[in-house]
Length: 185
Ligand SMILES: C[S@@+](CC[C@H](N)C(=O)[O-])C[C@H]1O[C@@H](n2cnc3c(N)ncnc32)[C@H](O)[C@@H]1O
Image (cartoon, rainbow, N blue to C red; front, side, top):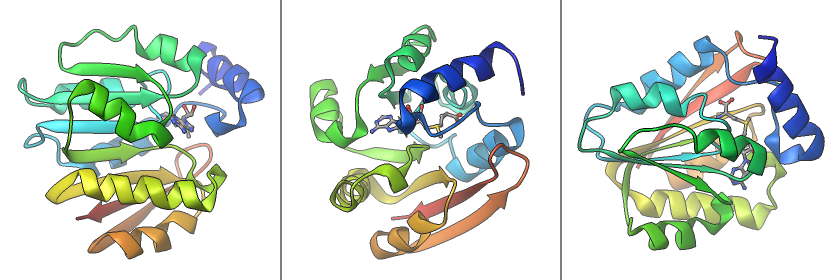
């Protein structure tokens, strides 16, 4: 993809290495992530690293009318775009997922059915990585799932420490190619 969307991501990346992407996810990557999520039965969905809403807006049509969807993005420029999405089920949050407890307490959420993540775990300190995974599994209901797309394999082993089952696929039709892991509580 080229054009204004790529320019937005590139500009954001140049000012903020944690953006960790030169362009939004491809339709192939998005399809793989959506297929891993099992959306129709979910009542509470959380997204880590929603950026401008490239996957967020594709999740919304698959959600039940009763569902709530908290999408969190740390980069201010990307989050300003995320906040433009209009849907009664969507709660966009400009914040850091490492402050997840505080964010969700403020919104009155204590559990989730599905959590999807594009945040670059490899750039977090080891302690922050473990804290986020511990919070993630703590939030999920039994049978709930965590779907994470990442550039490297480092998260896959860690997921095995927290989740009962982990399935990983590789999507080459994305820049960069990414691993998509689906982890079950
Ligand atoms: C690889 S990009 C994925 C963006 C988008 N969801 C997509 O599919 O193209 C990772 C996103 O996570 C955000 N991010 C990185 N660290 C974060 C953090 N600690 N809290 C919230 N968002 C974070 C980045 O700003 C970036 O928008």
